[in-house]
Length: 203
Image (cartoon, rainbow, N blue to C red; front, side, top):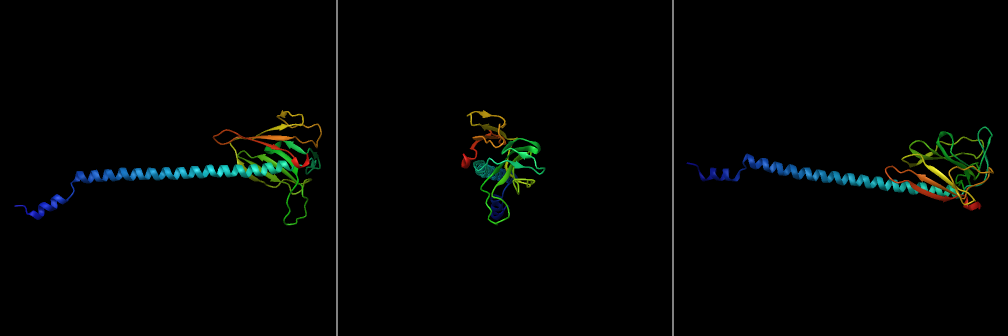
């Protein structure tokens, strides 16, 4: 005859089916929690990447706008001594724009002028800004990537005739456009259009 104690032990235990059901429910809950955690992490990474892109765009726009506003109508010489126009667009090595600007701060008191020759170029991945140690007879420095792009940038130039031109071909080497339009292809999005005034301190 089965004792009352043995009967209570069997009544308080779990059958195999109950254990399997419990494990299945636990697996479903754990899988859902893992999926939710992964979604949260992916959303955080995407948000951070978007924030980084916005911050990089703002930094670039600040530098680009300041550079163009301080362009000077000064001719410059290359390493071979050849004279170049005050503003050049397009060229070898992915060169996008080259000019001389004023306002080059000299906090260290180095032996150099306050004018700086600047070059923007496309390296296949990003828009790179490189400075020259001297406006004449110097090679450009390595430069720094300012903004990653989905493709090469495009430029248009507004002349003093009020018209936009796809190429900058001035009649005088010291002539500057009134404004420059820059189209920046964005990865997976519409191009960013930037219109900046040129040499506002000298007009």
